[in-house]
Figure 1 (tube, helix red, strand yellow):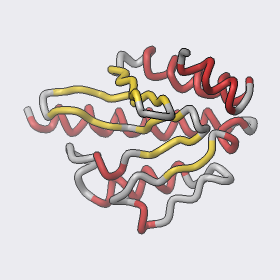
Figure 2: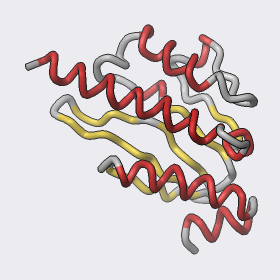
Figure 3: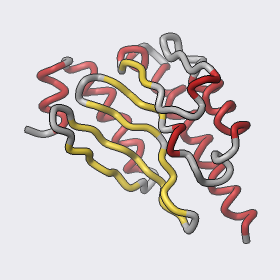
Figure 4: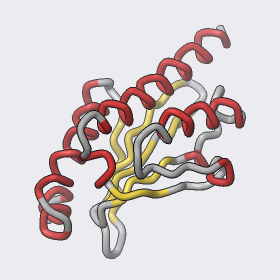
Length: 143
């Protein structure tokens, strides 16, 4: 069964639509997509690869959850807490996306539901566009 078929079966068409939008956003930016193959649930992880290594962004799961990959953010500038705080602040503007400071070294999760709300997926993706810009600027500063 495909990721989207499983998500549709477990959660419904709205969650499928938002998950597809997140995936298409990642593909449009040339991000590598790693497909997880858990025992009970599927996932996808958009990643930006550069000479510093893998830059994890978020993951989407068939059990309707999104994980922000703070714990795996080990490349500049997100190896520092200041950039992660800014990312969390941008994501926290979405109602139903709680990201307390204690989550900045973990993989906080939330339902896809809040991202379905009008304008919410735009704010979610804008935050990760900002993240990619910051990573690319840090990469240029290394030269």
